[in-house]
Length: 452
Image 1 (cartoon, one colour):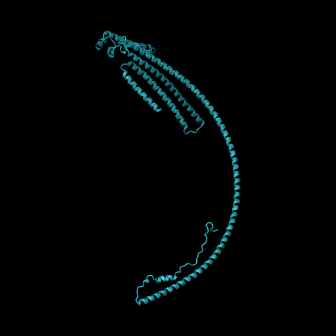
Image 2 (image 1 turned 30 degrees about the vertical axis):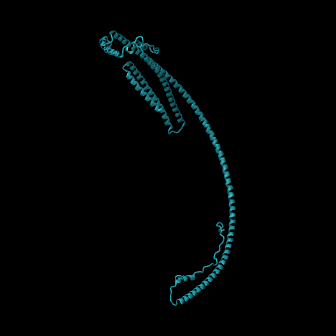
Image 3 (image 1 turned 135 degrees about the horizontal axis):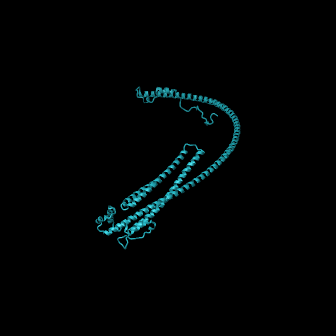
């Protein structure tokens, strides 16, 4: 929306600049017409400013209504009075918006019609300007006389001026622009008095006194026709203004009638809405009563179901308690029976262990006696072997002494002979050999059976 408004404003500025440049370029040759256009433009500008102020007031009214509606919505508890006020505010805002839309639509239609009429008039004037540029074949000095089909739509004064210009050679009266401008300067300098003719000969040496007189008559006739045309245009403006005022009055009457009709319609709709609201309130009250009755019935049903459920739960708890007590009694009897069996089993195992211990003691004692006998036998054998070894060594030494004849030689066996400490140690060591086993091996008992 903002982009559209900006585009429209930029186009308006562009058109105003183009119009100002066009008016500035043609102001010298069309002084009277430009003045009329400027006056008409001022009127249109005032009208536009007035419409803009009215539109701004309507927008401010709508904006105030929306803000009032928003203010009522914030920090207020809902109530029927508040809903009624909000509905009235909404209706006022809606009526203002619809009235603004309808007014804008009518205004746009009006402007569209005026734009189409202006386009047609511009096309007609453009064709008229093209006809002025044509020359009449019979008189090369005069422009061609061509009947304009749009003359029948113009006022008689405007038509007479247009016909006069076409017949007499256009806006210069058959003269070229330079001669005509020189004539106008001299004529305006003397205020249209006959004394201008002497000075005119100096500026128009190619024109005779008779041609100057004819051009003067042509110019006076042109001024007379232009005055009539100006009066006709003023009358046309007055009639147009009257038509516009009557059209505005008619439009205001229509708008007033439409406003009354809308007001009556809104009152009817409001009355209908009030009836519908009453009907809705009645239905809501009935629905609330039915809902309350249904909730009470559902509450009673739930209460009965709750009482029944609690009774069932109490009965179930009692039955479970009986089952639990019976189960605990069975478990107690079973546990006592198992404890008794376990006690018997432990006593039995204790007796078996005592018997095994006695047997093991006897076996160990026998094995100890056997080992002692074997140790004593081995000790005796070792002592005998030592004695034999000593005797053998003595015999060897004696033989060696006999051989050496009292000469002492180095004894090579001295290094490998046992020392006194070793001999003492060997006296207390037990003989090696296989004796009786002091330990009996049995099959292993699993861990889960140990202690049973």
